[in-house]
Image 1 (spheres, helix red, strand yellow):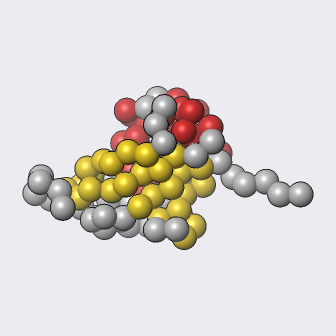
Image 2 (cartoon, rainbow, N blue to C red):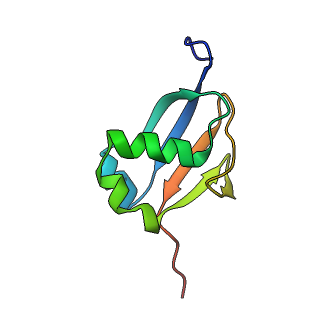
Length: 88
């Protein structure tokens, strides 16, 4: 649980080009309670400017399920950020 009142801890995993942009495989962040995935992306883009360049090529999952940017997070959630998957 977050030590800051009104904040929650979220685990964020990065894959492929998004991992390269951040330079980390996984991080833990504190963000305001009831924040959306869009809020998280905005916060991460400020800290990791290269993520902004990938905004149009970003897929999100929340607790192992595809999610849109309006999805709300809660304490202890796991978010994955990765490029669109291509198949053949």
